[in-house]
Image (cartoon, rainbow, N blue to C red; front, side, top):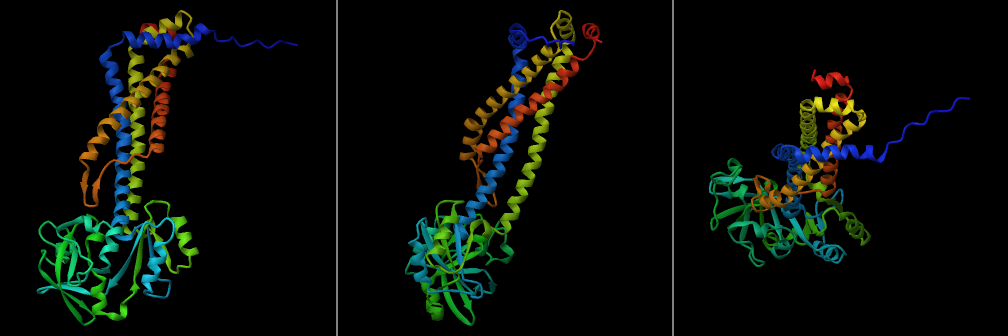
Length: 410
């Protein structure tokens, strides 16, 4: 019966060889080259997290705009088969009493058109209680000319920038062509007319909101008494984005009838836009990982090519091939970890603060970088793993060549 030959154990000294070799290489190597390598890794990592944070910022900005200007966190609409919520005041009072509801306001869509001189346009005219509305949307804070409606103002109207129109307005062709504060417009509603004064013009940078006009609910009551205490919807603000489900359950449990729609469901067009950003983000992330892998591969390959003779001598004096290759794998690990750390410091202490002060100005609104820390950590770990694998390939290939060819540099 033959005995199995025990595999030789790795001695403590052998285990220290890769660390010894890499320490000598880092200490005696060109410091500028080392700094450049780390800088390249930092740039590759920053590119990955910057693009992702920018797209996250755009998505967050669009979501915030939807909540702050049009839908709140939850929109309560009439039950299926009905057009209006009857007894809106009582429903509003009940909604406001529910735990988790910060504020709510009644919206009543007015089937009307606006006319200024010989210009007529159909826009979304909404009747609101100005005091309630100021608590649920940010329209009052977005007034760029004039002022917001006062609770007792039944002869005023505030209009969005896309309704007012004017030079450099994106949708000027369908607007009131440069309407200004103080001018009068005619509200036409099913044969009924009301002359209103433009009290203010608002600009939220969200098209859906900026094509809206607001009148006082009391104005609508005077024009169409049959619509008193009826609502097209009730806008509900919870103050907890993403936590609407429990509030909806409480609203239903309280006996409030109607269709409940969260801001995600109300996003409409923006949902398709943000999904496009997610797709682009995934594509650019893949490209970013490839770039990081190529950078490390080239660095390790060039380093190994310049040290072929040294590798051959190390193998010739008895140092095992896997210990030599481990040295370069360890080298790529150090480069990637230090590069990721340095890139993270630049990103958090230089880039993010800069874009908080100087956000991107896009039609959707002002966009800053938004960091998903779980995703950030995943990207950092992935970059390091990709770098290690990329450094492993040339390191293993180099130690498979004949020793004499390595020493001769052939």
